[in-house]
Amino acid sequence: MYYKYIVVGAGLAGLTIAERIAAELKEKVLIIEKRNHIGGNVYDSYNEDGILIHNYGPHIFHTNDREVYQYLSRFTPWNDFWHRVLTYVDGNLIPMPITVETINKLYNLNLSCDEVENFLKGKAVQIDEIKTSKDVALSKVGLDIYEKIFETYTKKQWGIDPGEIDTSVISRIPIRLNRDTRYFNDRYQGMPKYGFTKMCEKMVSNPNIKILLNTDYKEVIKDLKYDKLIYTGPTDYFYDYKFGKMEYRSINFIFETFNKEEYQAAPVVNYPNDYDFTRITEFKKLTWQEHKQTTILKEYPCSEGEPYYPFPTKECKEQFGLYQAEMDKEKNVIFLGRLAEYRYYNMDAVVRRALDIFQGGLNG
Ligand code: FAD
Image (cartoon, rainbow, N blue to C red; front, side):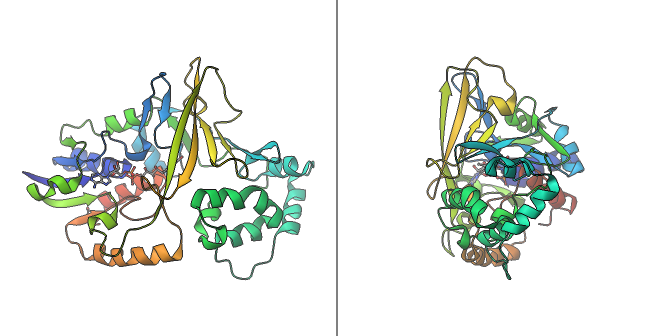
């Protein structure tokens, strides 16, 4: 059977590129997905208690990219949502990211914004060459805050010391010298009013798109003819692990439902120092659903299982470089998304990347 375009993977990367091909080029496109649903990791569904959960961990849409926001807004209206995160330290719930309120609560002070700037300068450690996430944290907030907030959380999250992790992980965490306790300060933030899955279903409602679920692409690809394959699965799998298996961090998701309306004070509470899980999400606080019960999610990071986060070390980057050299030689395969490109993309960034590839003429 012939399709001009075949897309492997029905995550946001695959769905965006398929939608563009079907709507703009008016070509038929086949999406092959090994799971039993579309949406990839942004998939959400109603659990047996009737509460909308994010099956692969909490997803909050935020972006400064107007075009991406407008593009996704074709497929969903948004709830006007501003994300908030609290962190449990020394028996207190303090706001994250670090703001003036965080410092005041952590040290029982009443400093102004300027005073907090000086306070942090006094704590910061002088590091000549910043090479790791530990260096980033120490140079911004000093040893005490590093130990209270970042060190154990990062160890739990990645299974290794922040001193072995490249700068990208902790650099993502902003420090604000004001009282703005919103987790993100992007211009556009929100949750799809009817959920991510409904948004994804609308993206692929074009009759030019055919979807094959429950199918690993390797089971069928030999029987298909195509001009271009857009591959959003793991690259090491594509090349039969010829340069070894790439390392990923996985998460064991444990959901619990309680017979009460509310569980915690914020949509997400981080536990850097207590318990084996990293954080608890309460879904009703993300989705604004009204329900007599409430469902929470505890995340236990682990090394085996579904690949979620590319591993942020120098060695892994070097190993991926071997695959990248092979990818660069491909003429009719485009590698797109967090698994194929072995890099962490937020939702907006992966949609941006898909739009760029499409607008660039699908040349990869
Ligand atoms: P995926 O969603 O992983 O899609 C890839 C698809 O390919 C999957 O459905 C997979 O089953 C399929 N596939 C793989 N191999 C094969 C094969 N052999 N054959 C067929 N199909 C295959 N981003 C945000 O912006 N905000 C957030 O709050 C946020 N929170 C996150 C929380 C967690 C726990 C995680 C893991 C990610 C989070 N993200 C968040 C990132 C977001 O999930 C990604 O940006 C997005 O999922 C990337 O889409 P993708 O299509 O590249 O990958």
